[in-house]
Image (tube, rainbow, N blue to C red; front, side, top):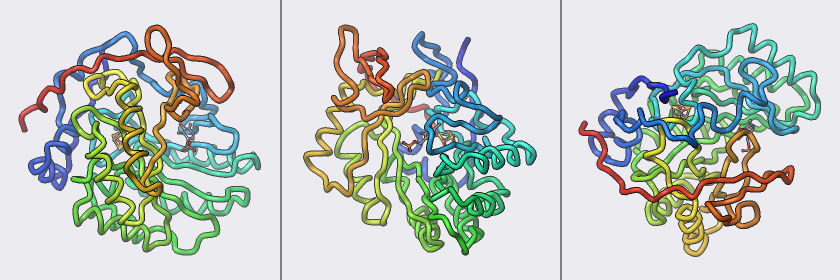
Length: 323
Ligand SMILES: *Cc1c(COP(=O)(O)O)cnc(C)c1O
Ligand code: SF4
């Protein structure tokens, strides 16, 4: 099956930034190579569907659940790992009720993670956070968002609407891939979220032609720590169909991670993470879990099972589509 054709979506702010930054432009401008299907690619690269007991809820780890209230994002990232679903209809109110009942009934769940799509684009966010906050066995809540990068003015408004009185700590994982994304507007949105008492961490996807060298990543991670945002994960790119031109070989990602370890403060080090294809979970992409094998790599999941991972060719970086 050819990869799904993800509609172009670039809000005016991001279009203007794309005109000034090649690294930003490459992340959002549709590219003819997205139509290429490769044998290793998957529609559901991290196996969400296999661990979904209810629509919109993924329960892969015993102590935390993922809830995807909306599949809408303010912009469409061309490398999106949920590319098969982004932009589709999110959860109905009844499905959200069912997800909350599922969490309420399971005291072993200590953390609810809102992802998507972008939860900051869902008008129900404030109400949802209040309801989750009322579930006593949730020690903290987490939101994954890219809205401060996609549309910082909109993120500022959402920050102002976050519930002020909260029991559980609120963590926000900001998806940011390049220092060019940290404009004055985005910095203001980050400060506004921090001003509402949220703790910010970042996650970055390693992307060919965008940030796949140690110097570019150092600049980003230092800028984040200076803003009070702790780099949390550097994700090896997931094998979503239509994203092959962004893929960095694991060997090169590991070399970059080693250079970062040698040159950067511990505060500025994210963990380099491989989400083992097929829903086997996230592991550190270091020797502890990933070792060389005849045709590439073997990744050991936390349950001890072993999974092959391809070597991948280190293709030339072609120029981005003209704007
Ligand atoms: C990535 C993910 C999480 C969060 O994992 P952390 O390592 O805690 O960041 C939780 N549930 C699912 C289904 C995930 O894919
Ligand atoms: S913000 Fe995340 S979910 Fe939304 S399009 Fe980008 S990568 Fe996909």
